[in-house]
Structures are given as C-alpha cells and as structure tokens.
Amino acid sequence: MMDLMLFGDRTYSLAIITIFAVLFATYGMLLVITQYLQNVRGFSPTDAGLLLLPYSASMMIVSLTAGKLVGVIGSRRLILLGLALLIVGFAVLIGGLQASTVMIGVGLFFVGVGVGLCLTPITSLAMTTVPTERAGMASGIMSAQRALGSTVGFAVLGSILAATLTVTLSSHLAGALPDPTERKEVADMIIGNANPRAYSAEIGPGRPIRHLNADTQKAILAVADSDFIEGIRFSLATAIVFLTLVLAAGIAWFPRGNGPIADAEREARALASEETARESPRL
Image (cartoon, rainbow, N blue to C red; front, side, top):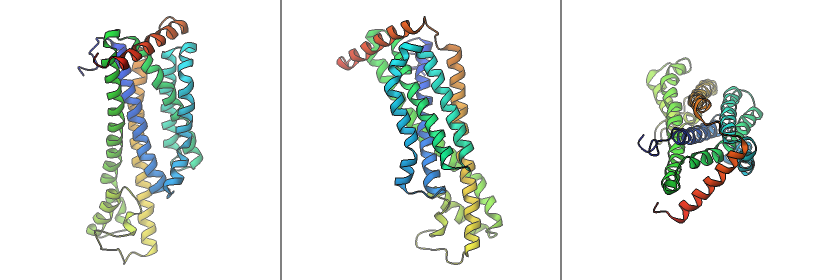
C-alpha cells in the first residue's frame, strides 16, 4: 500500500490497481480456460493454442492502435471501455462453457480487445501524474504490478477452481461410486491432476482402476466435467466482481481532463518521462 500512495496521487494509485486487476483477471482466465479446453473438452495442446488466437490476435491489433486512440477520445474513455469489454468477455465465457467453441472464441475476442484498450492508456495516464524526477521509480512500480497481477491471477483463480472441486466433487460422485474410500481416491486424483479424466488411468502410483466398467466411467466423467465447468465459472465470476469494482472506481475517480488534445499532450509527456527513466535507471 505504501508503494501505491508513494506519489500522493489518487489517479496514479488507481491506475496501478487497474493494471493489477486487468492482468490478474486475464492471466487467471487463461489458466482456467486452457484447462477447460484441454482437460474438459479434450483438445490437444496445439488445438487449444489455436483456439486462444482470438484473444492474442485481437489484443495485439488493438494494442498497436491504442496509443493513437488516446489522442482522439482520451485515456479515461479508453480505460473504462476496455474494462467494460473485459467484463463482457468474461460473461460470454461463463455462458459459453457449455455451448460451443465459437462462444468461447467470442468471449476471448472481447477479452483481448479490452486488454488492448486498457494497458497503454493506463500507463500513459499513470506516468502523467508523476514528477519527472520520480519517473524511474513509477515505471518500476508499474512493472512490478504487471508481474504481481499475472502471478496472483494464476494462483487465485486456479485455487478457486481447486477449492470448488474439493467442496463439491466427492459428494457429487456418490451416485457413481458408493464406496467413500474409492470415491475420495477418485476425487483426489481428478483434483490433483486438474483433469476430469485422470481417474481413468490409475489411482495412486502403479495402481490402475481395473474394475470400473464403461457406464461407471461415463458417470464419473459426466460429474467431473460438470463440476469443472462450475468451478471455472466461479473463478471467472470472481474476476468479474474485481473488474467491476475497479470499473466503478474508474468512473468515479479517473480524471475527465480537458479533452483529446490535453490527453495527447499528457501522453507525449508520459512517453518522455519513460524515456528519461530508461536512460537514468538510478532515478
């Protein structure tokens, strides 16, 4: 918290929190959606990577134009629009998990556009609030928040998925596996491998499940798939809540400024500050 208020500016602090929130939500989403595509839907790593292209392609294209858009419509509007599109993208993903890969692609596209619209304007806005002599320190804090956001997003959203499965899976398997010991072993294997199909290979090192018939395996898989989807939805819903809080704070506190021209001037100063920071790392 001391780092966030280091410069005594609410705009800078909110920009730092926004960077953290965007990367927290995005990287956490990539983790659970990759698990969904590979472990629930059964796509190969190559196919799962191709299905993520709507996110990476849209983010790359939008990021290349975001700097120019700041001078046209202003940083505040771009950041708020980006956060709103992120929320829409996550909502589409939640609704599309039991639909089709097309819906997953649409959701990933919105997420990519939202991230592309957010990050450059946030950096520009943050750097405009910082005195030139503090530019190096400010740039370092922003870089740290990017790293923290992605790391914490992986940890938290992945943990929410695992915790949801831990709470629900064993009890939901009761119909397929009446024996509590066997049910616990199957649930632990599925959760530990983050894979609904993990039980079909073995339970514990070198102890294959040989007695499960095809109908039992189908019943276990149906329950595990359903619980995985619900856990992923809960993870994504958590990210939506966080992003919504940040969006509300941005609507209330991001400066409205004096129009696009002022935003363009601020962006030029921010870029100059970052150049100074790179040339003078001791600052």
